[in-house]
Image (cartoon, rainbow, N blue to C red):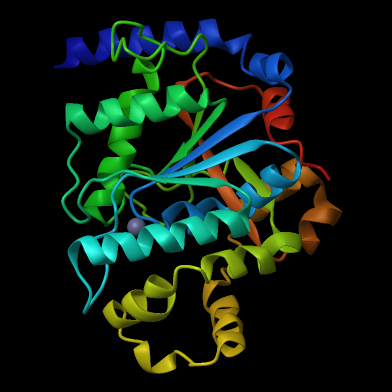
Length: 299
Ligand SMILES: [Zn+2]
């Protein structure tokens, strides 16, 4: 097992290095940087990377959200196909509000496993989008679907560039930069906010887009979290409630990262932020590469 890991690590290193010089190449080729955010359920990308997605979309980047499951287990009274259809419609509306396209893969919610079949689905999504940036959960999340989405994207991170894997779709010529969404799990190691994005100015838009997931924000999550009695009935009151509910405090580590990228004065004013960790898979960006891929930094 160790040997196999070493061989894989060497190949990843080689392809990572080969890709290094080309990290931001495709942007100049097409004039548009392409971002794919991957989550387990049709509201995960929204929550973890939605503010950053809005900023990317406003700069003219091509942004896609992918949900690896169809969300058909995420409700207390609705089930199966009917629920999957409702959540698909909510995801499409959210996508419009974020300014991104939203794909939902037809895998069952709550039953995701890191199989070869799903790995190939993800490889094809990343290739099809010709992604420069791929963002996914870390593989140590509490929810098995989140955890295995993390594993599946890690498993795809090298294979997207291997022509003989899923040969029906051309392999990427360069490996994208892979990042993780922020989480608060401490084991085996805490999340490292390598890149922190100021989303204060677009936070209201993020909440408005998340409000499209009615079945989740106002029904399922409050039911499973035992706060259903807090949910107001009117539309405006719900948005107000959601704004407050989704507000997260900025950790000292995130604040330090904001200072690195925006300078001390600007960082002190940031009220809402999203952070990402650079993975050891795929292309390994320098700070300059990160500034090119995330031009909102420092502004
Ligand atoms: Zn989820």
